[in-house]
Length: 335
Image 1 (cartoon, rainbow, N blue to C red):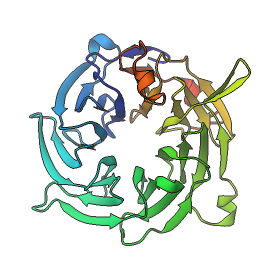
Image 2: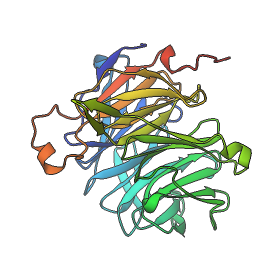
Image 3: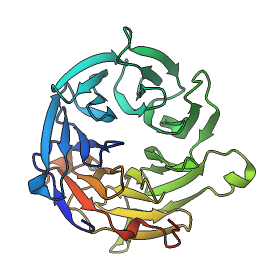
């Protein structure tokens, strides 16, 4: 279905905070929204073969969601609770909470644990099967905006442009403490599937590519670049980069911005491979499925222009599914 694009039926009523594909089923997609729901979709090859499978209501806007396996997931948001989602019977169980909004979460298959992060400055580990699900809590110096995980490396992106990197097998202390290479607030984060590092992006139209290896040789490879910018009538317009997603096979990545565009980058050769046609709304979240054949794209108002922007006549929030073709493959790919 390369280059084909369609909108999912029954989209959320309010802005989409997160789209997240299953790590094992290429057709299972979770969508978290400010309309206080998380929806599970079965994604087909077009709108007529795609459907909403179930919906989970929350007490406030949902900011984060992830899968634990084909039948279960997790969610968190502005009501501070961490919920375990059972897709089979469409039920939620509160397994714990933070003292402020839950901003981000990932599931570790190796630990069989949920790792959640919050504006309360903690990272917490949960095992929903245990009598006391919360296993541990780890204090950080600032509010946490995003976390992502590859192998045993957990990257924690915080306010004040701080980053901590943990080994999830020993969470007592971060293995590395870093400052962002970017001058402005961190808006998005994604780890490389090959485990070498991560990409991070800011509210000021820039992306940085970083590497875990602290050696001077590896650190020399890191770099940052401008993106999601446009000159209109001689005036430079700069938009936040709201979401980053790595292709599971090719290690290239896509970026999504409030300018309504999605671009694909090959960070090894420092080149853009493709910019997809612009959407009518900002793009808030993107995700590749596990076989890399589809890209989920949430387009909705992202409040960059405050209440005034919300009053404008807009297309309703949509989740688009784009078929991915050879444009995501590096030119020198030997596969």
